[in-house]
Length: 178
Image (cartoon, rainbow, N blue to C red; front, top):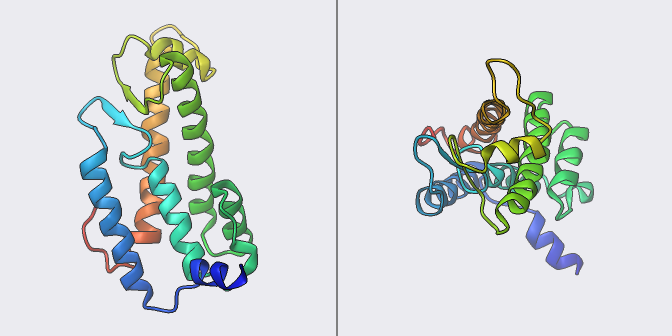
């Protein structure tokens, strides 16, 4: 088991090469799996989604895997460990931690509202208002709960994408701004 963990968590090659491979994989998954378009968002495969968080975290676990404290399969715990060891900046940790919590909570509420495994949300979808209420958003004069939810979603995913770019794209040589 120790040998398997070492193989899974320790990268002995060039960081830029590994980061480039991860970024190419991410770009392909976003292109082929995300069904995003203006007003339609994929909280799992889309820009700044759960996959950005998971791949950023896993890349850093591989690079810094000599530290057994980073060896966990739970993304939330991995983010905390990376933060505690100052592998990531406070802003990156905050973006990944808050993004992961928000997107997982949204994913769970989305399943309840739609009754399936959907991970797509749309600006003007019929189920957006009930979803927003399940996310503790409220209607206010001049601002609907649904609009507040979408604004929060865009803010969270923008921060996550920035962290992803800093963690994955920059070490890959900055190839392909995404």
